[in-house]
Length: 234
Picture 1 (tube, rainbow, N blue to C red):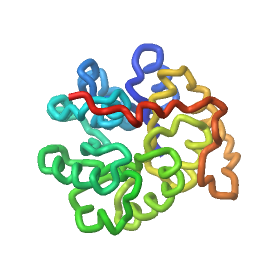
Picture 2 (picture 1 turned 30 degrees about the vertical axis):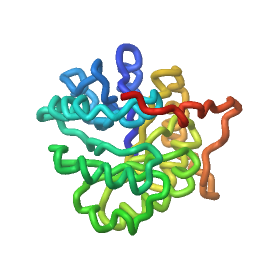
Picture 3 (picture 1 turned 90 degrees about the vertical axis):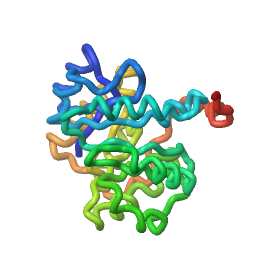
């Protein structure tokens, strides 16, 4: 399972390389794909579409920026580019992705599945994509992550799980057979010990719990969900 970090630079870049961690390039003006990302290719390199960041900050999706980011890939070998989607948007997200798909010129495009989607919804169009990206809310994601991994693998499609910033999440993703995962928290919060602990478990062959981890351990902090109700700023 490939582990990607959100734009590890400086000391975080060195830490990522020492742990065989790749890079999920965030789609923002200061972090377009470029030569500095090439070193992460052996460990896994992918391009996010920026939809989650726009959603969290109450902004409309920046399609022009996304197009610039894709154009900057050049000849770099990426695991995938995430097709534009709508966070927790269900069928609306699928329709949005399908609208964008003809405009995304790269050989490996990931379709993001969101809250409310089912395999039957994407079966007719799945041949348009080469990767599945399991997004959505935390509860929906971990309730159905194993379903999506099995669904994708049954069709020969690798599956990525986003926002796996906790040790329990990495273990769960590994156990259900995810091909890749990512998180920005290791760089932002300096929590590389999570990846180190996961790597140690692999090296020591401690194994994973027998019971399926349907949901990751809950943190003690209070979650601020006020951003969900923010109106989009045009």
